[in-house]
Length: 159
Length: 341
Picture 1 (tube, rainbow over the protein chains, first blue to last red):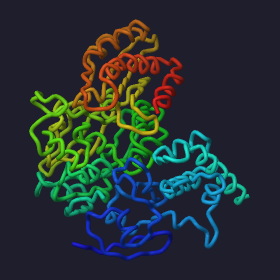
Picture 2: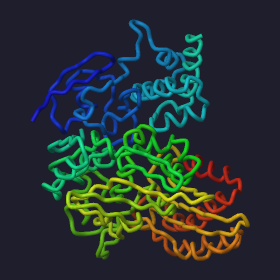
Picture 3: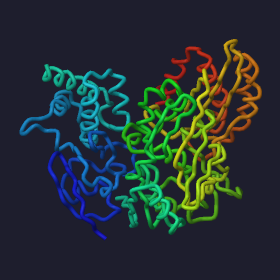
Picture 4: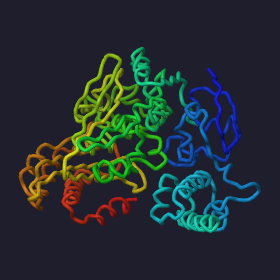
């Protein structure tokens, strides 16, 4: 039986009806039409569906939507600043850190959570934070470079 | 797409309410803690409970306290909380090493310690989609009557894959199981049975509510994990050690535990007996590693060759004991974590 839930996605409240067996990923993509978050392995093995739940990265394919009632969710659609790219997005474009792009939304939000918590991460800390996000295209080095570059931009912004 | 089957979701606000809900229909209910093991299994139709009882709002299971004599960790404490807890990093290093090597940052932020201790046993013939399992013929762990790992085996050989259990067993942890009819406490080692299907002695109406770990002055612990990928993977072997020495360097208390070598995590009492009362010398470490070796019975249900996984028992017991002795084994650890990746 469908039940009402309300999700705060990218600062905007969404009221929707959902069945208990829907994952957060399914509700984001199918009920709210927020298709930036990608449907990957569906089993918690790839990181493509990562979103931030109250600021912490989680796999939306392994969280029941009803368990997120009333919580703050950040998806890749929430990164942009008006019409401008978030520094992470700009750095990913500049460094060629996205090729096919399927893993990119999950990587971006995971990197955002890292930089929110740790504005000056070491290369090891970036690697550890992103170790659950699989990328079959880039070989990861461009992704690591892009996160470093974005961290630098964000630190400069705060000065 | 892999969709979850239908179920009823119940969200109790207290432990007593959760236990009452569970007792109403234990055979058809599952506890939903982090869900990172249960939900993939449900998507693959390995588990199809009619009711899920969520522990998300049961605050009393989320407590973690560090006292001088004992560490108490609630069953719903998230792995990430344990991994990043400063006091635990100093007091129970082996546990933190084990927990920080479970799955990924994303999953550790959702998964719970109780869930990892109750982790379903794994097998290459079981952890597959329903069409895959149907095509080969269902195995006895779910819907069939044969074990594809060893077709003459009378029991299921799926492997225990929890990293936290060997680490906590080496540390002498006790677990508390609660049901509507009462509470019991048992050594963590007694939670497990060497059967891939009935791998827990926990009854269906019980919830793992608390882990109690005694604090021993001067004890040092370590956990070493063999896996295919350094980034994240289930263990192909886990070795946990905990050693307490007196001021003269004589071992007063020692435990060695193995994970991912059978359907249950194993203590190695022979290694404890060999180490106690002796200095932690190279010869004692060699003997302890020899004692652990025959207990490991890896089967052909996971990655890498059987002979390699068994041979690595001696290697990892040696590394773990050298680490608690104070040797610099950081390069060995780094190589194990990264080069295999």
